[in-house]
Image (cartoon, rainbow, N blue to C red):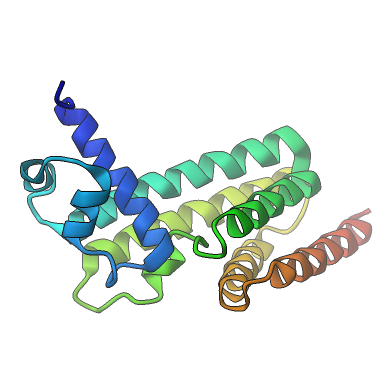
Length: 191
């Protein structure tokens, strides 16, 4: 039985998202995406007539939305401090189980963008903006200053990159501890 067309589109997006997370945009080829996804070759240009950049942008949007939901769920379910601890634990598990091949799916593309890749740049920008808004809203809901959101996100992004390079979760753990200390000090100041 052949896959439905929507199944082929989703397979292409899911496979692309994973490959981008592991190896970035330049190292991810269309042949590799097709082979790994087992999607029919004709479906690639049917669903993504603009090619690899359109497919990658759609994959980034999807994975960005999935992470937004994860963050939102963790923060609403566990509160600010435990929610962040849950998120850090999620990332630590992802790094270890992937043998440090998976980090932030957006940063792996954003760090290698070329000026002419406007669709990818816009997708990365939209995802990061969405994440910043989510963190800002969580901070505001717990009476913390919203301006801390960029510090938190950039700290986590940098820690994930260092973890992959060093093949260790130490940067993530120490960054998390520093962020918790900052938030606890801010909380004590707000009392």
